[in-house]
Image 1: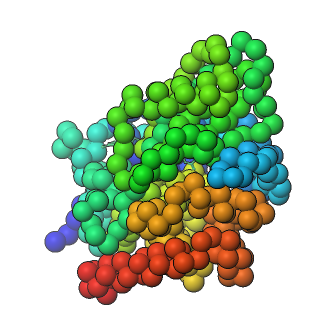
Image 2: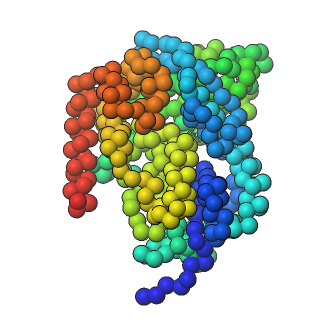
Length: 400
Ligand SMILES: Cc1cc2nc3c(=O)[nH]c(=O)nc-3n(C[C@H](O)[C@H](O)[C@H](O)COP(=O)(O)OP(=O)(O)OC[C@H]3O[C@@H](n4cnc5c(N)ncnc54)[C@H](O)[C@@H]3O)c2cc1C
């Protein structure tokens, strides 16, 4: 069967964090001669999320960074500390600023065509990718890069995959009197009531002495109804932060998959990117920096004539880190240890920079061993064996 010639070189499906970042990195990599379609159901505006991440140097969107912190607070089991982050800084980008940057930048990119359509399928054969819209239109491209998911990233029925969720609701609160220390972000505050089978903590990002984003976060197998976070969040604001009068300025709600399912599974002409393409760190939910790394690598591969699939080669370090992620999920899933204990061991018994490097998958084998020495070894060994077994069963199931 011969297919019609492609309308575009690249179809970017979904213009959120991953799609917009990919378009940006493509242009930066010198792909301005390529015909690119940027497809989303609608232009993105407003502050629907805030992205935080840590970094040692300047990132691609440095001018958009809204706040930076050099110290974090951690409150765990029998351990509370303010930890310096050097050489890292914890940074926040507000999505409203990110989207506004692109509303200004995109009209100046003549090779990028924006299409506002509802996508119902992203298909492929060996030669081209096709995007099908609700109106029945078909867009053809040499490659499609899709951050749009048509099914849930993981199914709890899959016995050989860990399928957890990080879900949270946060308020930007404003207080009449100075309340927050703007120099210190609270990464994890476990001084909230815990429950069997869940990990719960609060997260505080102060913008200034009067204003902060305060979130109540849960890791668990299933998500909560949106209004279920209000009471624990209110209790945290009054009991731990001792806030009396405050105004809620904004609300943020999010659900992020924490799974070791292979979301980036290899296809021919469709490359899955973003949260639904496996760019989320399964054990933490952090995604934004990994999106930058991967989309930059995809753009570099295309610019040098390589397949974009080469942007994610398996390496010994990557396989090791995937095993750590699966192990941690297994510890939580099988309730071998409370999450509060696991994260306290990591932060109390390691230099903070080592923990951040470990979570960034930048550690050497020796450093990985140093980190592993600080956790509960019997529980983690059992979970490593269980995670290996599950991986093996998945490989067998895939016919490998
Ligand atoms: C509230 C919130 C806070 C977060 N905070 C952090 C953080 O602090 N740090 C971090 O590292 N990660 C964070 N994340 C996780 C992750 O970084 C974000 O979810 C990020 O936006 C993922 O990028 P994405 O491009 O994969 O998805 P999105 O940004 O959601 O983009 C997907 C795009 O696809 C479009 N789309 C979907 N379906 C269709 C369709 N059928 N047809 C056409 N278009 C469609 C959507 O309109 C959207 O624009 C957060 C997530 C949320 C939800």
